[in-house]
Amino acid sequence: MQIAISIKNPIYRAYLKGIFELKNGYLLLTRDHDFGKVIISRVKYSREPIKTIVDHTTVVFDLPSGRSLANGEKYYLYICKEDQAKINEQLDAIFNIDFDRYCLEGKKLSMMQKDVIQAFIISRKIISLIGDNETLKKREYRDQLSVMKKYEDQLRKKAYYRNAHIEKSLNEYKQLIAS
Image (cartoon, rainbow, N blue to C red; front, side, top):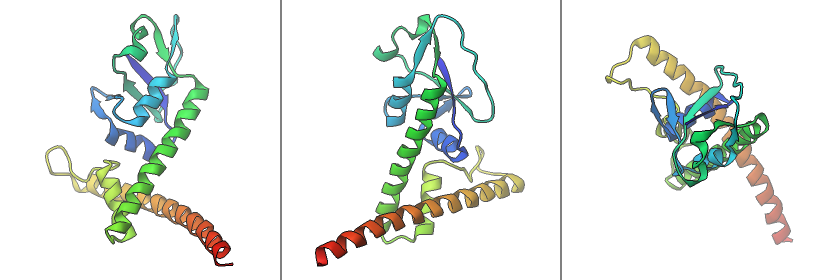
């Protein structure tokens, strides 16, 4: 049983490939990760095939068998557009929580923010600088470095914005206590 979802943000599509195993072109969805549970909870059944638009934003998941999808074999499975928009929002929230926790742990270890962001990108397999046979062509390596730089910039801005927002509210609270 497969389900196709449009994931708009390219960094989130790459993030999903680090969370779920890729097999035969499909990401193997599991309930082990919260996002797997989110997707499974949004699956709908239809007696007739549902037209799905497949483009560069489409991610196809292979669904696990289980109680929540027990009748899935008998129907066509889909996720409506509204639920796909909600899934994109929930993925954004899960990504942000994961990123924030990673940054906090890096701060506790006295790591520089740049190093924490690079470690996050590599540990979550958002990009891979190592090929299947441990050697990459120079062009592929440069392309991956370019993508990594782009994602580092995005995440650095995100970290700055989120930290500034938290520091501002803490300073307001600190002033209230001092008075």
